[in-house]
Image 1: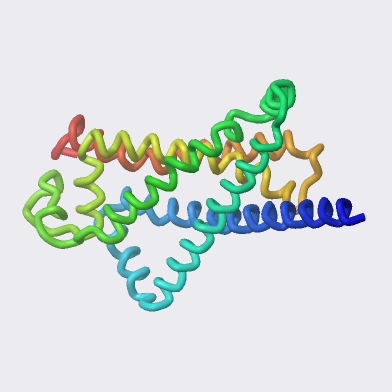
Image 2 (image 1 turned 180 degrees about the vertical axis):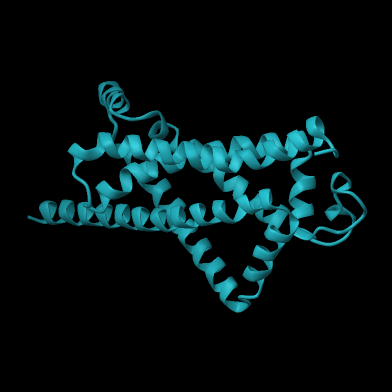
Length: 236
């Protein structure tokens, strides 16, 4: 009887953790999509992107509440996802079980832990570069735009992506975001009980499309900067 109760308790705990991972993942998905929309303003020029940044800054303490909420979601999501992954690995007691499990998994799910690690590292570097980076001074001046005017966040982002190595690292990171996102979207609805397992094929197709669009959307920014800087030049 105690063994049955213990097993039931473990299952309940596991399901609860999966639900928290799903809910926090959904929250992070909403943030990523919103963040992409804001970042795309770089194509509209300095005034549009800097205006967007100023509106966010005008939120004051509310912005920090949102940031802390985002960090809390990220910590819960990463911590519980890592715990569940480790628990699943520890349960695989035979080579056959591992092979069978892998055969049912998508590429995104198989690389989930690795893409998650890359995204975690990228998150901190991204904050360091753009959120806490200096948005005044020579680092925000873009000679390509003409003159010596400081361009705030726009200039900071532009000069960062004008460095091919930094741009390449960013592109790799956002491809991992898209890969991670595709699996998250496909699995979150099943975990929350919104979709049945029979609907997963269609959900996977939609999720994969969204992941590709998000990756291409983010990657288009450094690609645009590199093309403007090294190919088109100042005459554009």
